[in-house]
Amino acid sequence: MDKNFAARRRRDLIIAAALAVIAALTPLFVKDVVVQNILILTLMYAGLSQSWNILSGYCGQISLGHALYFGLGAYTTELLFTKFGVLPWFGMLAGGVVSALIAMGLGYPFFRLRGHYFVIATIVIAEIGLLLFHNWEWAGAAMGITIPIRGDSWLKFQFARSKLPYFYFALLLACVAWFVTWWLEDSKWGFWWRAVKDNPDAAESLGVDVFNSKMGAAAVSAFLVAVGGSFYAQFVSYIDPESVMGFQFSLLMALPAVLGGIGTLWGPVLGAAILIPLTEITRFKFGGSGSGVDLIIYGTLIVLISLALPRGLMSLFSRPKKTGATR
Image (cartoon, rainbow, N blue to C red; front, side):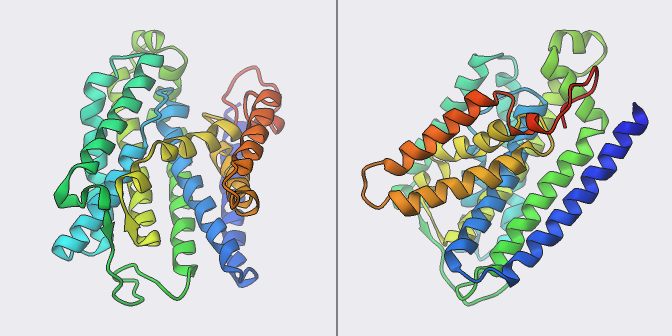
């Protein structure tokens, strides 16, 4: 079994490397700006969903408030850039650290909650963060922040003439989130998280540090999501509370993992590859009339897939096993 597990991990790494190379070559053949924009968003949400999956999928702490960390990453980066001239690269790191610390600070009381109580708490705290930024004048309040364009530059991470630099950073974000998950999956923390998810009381009786394992998962998850928020702010060049902290971001991080297979390595990637293009295409094709046809089509397809495959699309590729986690 150990040999099979090691072989699967090597296979996963080879497949991931091959897919990354294919994705990196895609812009050479895809010149349409709209399609490039869809690819960027798909890669970004693949990374965000993979990050969300660390806490909610592997550790079993279902969060619907990750928009808070996404927004904190965006605001930290842009406030440092516009107010103090700090380069976005340092802002990304600062946003990730701030979000990780806040995630652990919130985890201290929240991880004592279980089930739906924890889910509700994450929604409430994210909405509180949204309201605070709506009324924080120094951070632009409801008017938000417009990021000044100072010419195409990797140093300032701004590009007005081409989307390709954003595409490659989004690809890097997705690859880093996947690799971190792959690495943690076979670590002590990965085994602890799965034990906590299955039965926290039994895990604690076997020596698992349940509380600290949850805190670690929250910190890693929040850090990566905040980096995604920083990237998104640079990509769109304007942020306000609703555009980076709205509840829809929490949903769009969770849905790809749920659709693809929560608590699996490839689920968030597969879910994002289907969900995000579907979201954008239905919006482009049917959203202009304002009738909500795009949302009806999109929602109906998600419901049908969820009913047909409640364990996610990855269940199509998994064979029944006596032991071991779904890959």
